[in-house]
Length: 178
Image 1 (cartoon, rainbow, N blue to C red):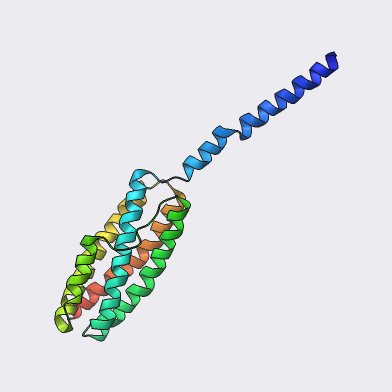
Image 2 (cartoon, helix red, strand yellow):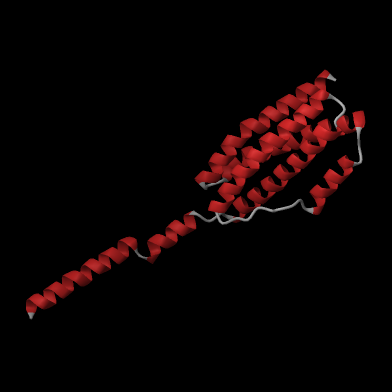
């Protein structure tokens, strides 16, 4: 009987240790590490909205732009921001964050305003918008890079900043050449 109690005690102790090592607290900690903070969620949604807007405006620029430079830049915006948007969707999915599927009213109004323009007026408005937008975006991404804790989101930000900085440099150079 004593050996039976001893075996029972050893098995119970083993199960208790296993539960302590791999139990609900351990899984809860892992799950919490995969969730985005409120600030990270806001950044993701804002970045997604901005990225979708860049693609829409890039499509307009490639169609309505007067100069070859604006058309080419628009094409580059579509290509680069589609890739950035796809990367953001992947990271957001890992964090359980749903990115917007369509533009909000504010961003749709920006696109609608540009849709009404053409020729040199379109080029001027588009170039000015791209300079302001990319200056703001680079600054916001750099700020988020310092604040974000999630490693996947941090990597996304660090991978995206050089592309956005390249866009800013290109459009500023084009603007100064005019």
